[in-house]
Amino acid sequence: MTTGQDIIEQWFYLYSNDVYHFLIYFTGSTDVEDLVQEVYIRAFNHLHQFKGNSSPKTWLFTIARNLAVDRKRKNAKELTKKQNSQIFAKTKEEMSPDLIYEQNEQTTEIMDAIMSLKKDYRDVVFLRAVKEFSIAETANILKCSSSKVRVTYHRALKMIQNQLKGGEIHE
Amino acid sequence: MNDSIKELEKRIKNSWPVHDLSEAAQQSILYNIKMHQNSRNKQSKVKRYRVAYGLSLVAVMLVAFILIKPMFDKHQSVGPKPTIQKEPVVNEAHPPKVKKEVKSEYYFPQWFNSNNNTVYINNNIGWAMIKEDHATHSEAVKILFTVNHGDEWKTISRINGDENSSLLGGTKVGITFNNKKHGWISIRNDADPEAPYLLESTDGGKKWRKQLLPIPDQYKDMPRDITKPVFFSSSDGIVPIIEVASSPQESKLLYMIVTHDSGKTWTAVTEQSSGNLSWDFRDPSHGKVIFNKKTWITPDLGGNWHSQ
Image 1 (cartoon, rainbow over the protein chains, first blue to last red):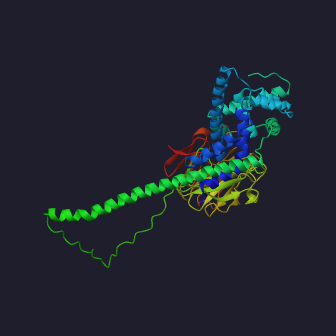
Image 2: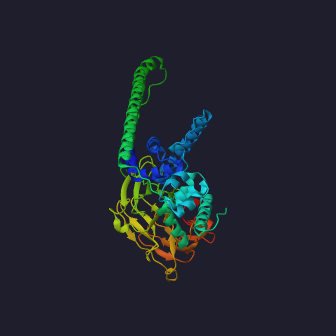
Image 3: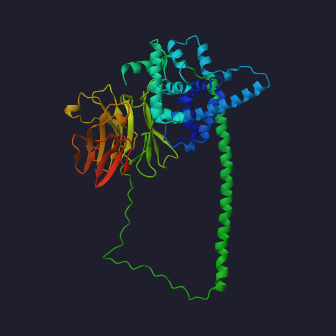
């Protein structure tokens, strides 16, 4: 019988790059290796609760999202403290996804169009188009309804299309 | 979904900057995870020893109590002496019946989880079909098996570039078993004119082979989609063949694939009944199947089922 350790190791080889990619996108920082580790440690600790109702990848992304949200809250608190003590300095962790992608010389027209969307829309585009999750899986990770994902994704693609055609973005 | 949307999705995927962990970072993270796992295992061992020690103490006390109790009862007993129980007389003409081996009870229809990738045939035995997510083979899956309702899963077979590679093509839509040995995976494959079809296993999911399904002439040129087989008894099962749409809610039933011999042969039925099975899918969100006077409802053309 495969042990929990074997399963986690297998999942690490299969999905760690996807989890890393997701965490970079979601936190807006490239310094997320400790979060990748935490995702897998949490998965190991709670493996008995994983009943196969979702795919392991969806489950790992759900854990990653929760951790990323915690990290963002924590960073926001620290940021407030720093601002209060007048020693505010922008660090890598505090950069928004927009900045990360703006700095990339390879940024294309299409990425400009994506980055001009609202974050809710971008999240759905990232999970559906880039990570190829189904509507139900995306809804599961983002903790929203399937119909919201369906509508949001449809609108986001339309907006990107309009932007590429040189049109204005309308919501 | 039209071509321009598919093209756009492809462009988004290709344009989005890729970030991969470096080899060194991977090794370091994996090492830390293993260290954590080992320390957890040690902790749980200590916990187990503590529980075992506690239980053995209780057992010793119980045995001591059982041994001591008769000594007290001897002095207190005032009732009649117990009668000696005689051996039962065996009648040669009617020998006692030999207890028959109890057959496994299976669920009919089977229990599927809401994501369609897990099927249980009773309270304990189930299979899960998990996407491997291999970079070059998005259609690759592995089949897991459990005998304790998902507490532990064991990988029993894979369909990927290395194992069962001839079966790799096509999206693996759903998995069904109707007993411990016999199971099916339904395949959607837009590129294959013979699709949709099934993969069949007769050894509990270890080996799989293609099982083509009949197509009525009038539907041969029409794009066809599939949900998954479901059995209402050990021999009677159906596979809904549906219209291609972006979701089951927007689709409808084209025709029904039916078996009455435990999935050995399948027939395409364009009417509303076959043998002891009948169905009504005019409302796709409230598909109805009647078997042995019992009605079953599917809200998504065969993805999930519940009794009425």
